[in-house]
Amino acid sequence: MNLKQLPYFIAIAETGSLSAAARRTGVSQPAVSGYLHDLERELGIALFLRSGRRMTPTAAGNIYLEMAREVLGLQARTRTQIQARHNPLKQRIRVGVSPHRGAQALAAIYRPFNLRFPDTEILPMESYVGQAYQMLTHSEMDLAFSTAAEPLPQNNLHFLPLQKEELVLVLPTFHPLAAQASPDAAEAPSIDLAQFRDTPFVLMTPDSTVGQVSRQLFSQAGFSPVVAFQSKNVIMTNEMIRSGAGAGLIPAYYAKPAENVVYFRLSQPGYLTFCAVWAEGRALTEAERYLLYLKVNLWDRKNPGLLTSNLMPEEMRLIQQEFAASGPLAAAEEAAML
Image (cartoon, rainbow, N blue to C red):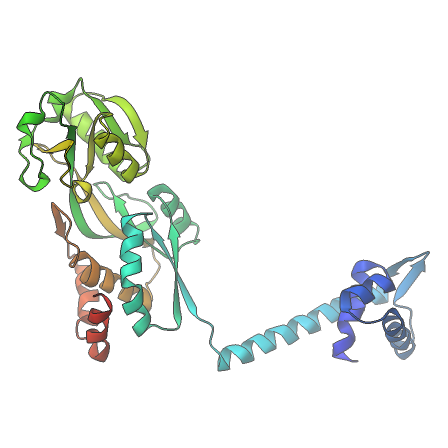
């Protein structure tokens, strides 16, 4: 048996034609025909039925076909294992990030991560919250940096809280209450959301975390808002508010001083909780834990958000301890963030 000729047999069986098999395998038709003739003579049995121009495997031919596929499959697996031993394939972490802030954070920590884990590939997967949860549940994503409303969801996902950020109320400067507000969100006075019962609002969609927290705030204030515009994109929402389409509730990170808007904090504030999320019961790899370590130490701490507090639950504290004395790469990692 010549293993190099097994693809000829498979091609004949799958195409039903010597000429088609020759075209598929890149050899001449006489060569394929001669191979089959020699093989049938060697085995002493017909392997194909000829009906006009169509060739169909006999019972013996089907047995040989199955064997040929198994042998070639074993050959391919053996080659792959040998190559993997000498040229290890990169491991891969599929990381879910939001299209804006999450993507910025992942891009910033990529280089220092690569210094320590050069054989691990980070595959960013931009997604909004609901989609990320679904992909994590179906093992289509390994880890996600996401936001969650409080209390944290109770489902088949594990949430590790990293930060909390306050939502602020944004008003166009022509709003009747704008004179009482501040252009600086950090110095903004507090106000009861119920005073804006008749104000049109630009809101994040209900399937977003900001939208969920906003609904809770309106419920606490005792009214349903007049919705002028909705979007799942926080940048779009913020720009619509700045254009004068209505008031809005946005994360403090986006509450930058601008000529046409002012800010209030809420007397009953609402918060986003930034979390690392993965499937319940799944143990993080060393590379994944290191990614969390970099996110907290080389992004969150270097990019403090307005009205944001860093969290350090026990689980994250243990990860901190694991990499705190990280050895010779620590200086290089710091430098890579500059």
